[in-house]
Image 1 (tube, rainbow, N blue to C red):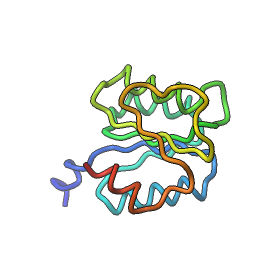
Image 2: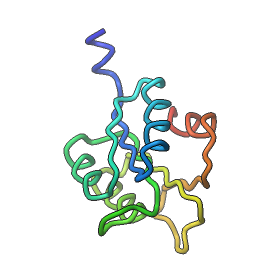
Image 3: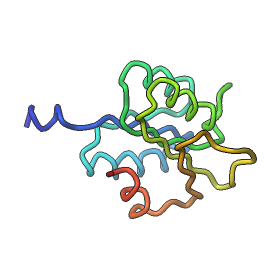
Length: 118
């Protein structure tokens, strides 16, 4: 079990709604990710820097000074190989950073997992 645990990729889930955050985290944990849950982008930015995730899933509208699109850019600036998914109830008003995928809420578990487990 210890060896298998080492092979798990880190995913960061950033969502200010605790129910949605927990649901996404549970799906990812069942798909063999170690999940770090954050309710704001500033906390998530620290996690990105310290844990080097393979996947970041973030809402656009977050509490704090940084929004999800700015967090997505920060994550890519830290590691160009990180996969970033932005989810929101509304389409972003501007362009997303290159390589960032957008999904409109509600995001269905099958869709989320298909993108997360690549």
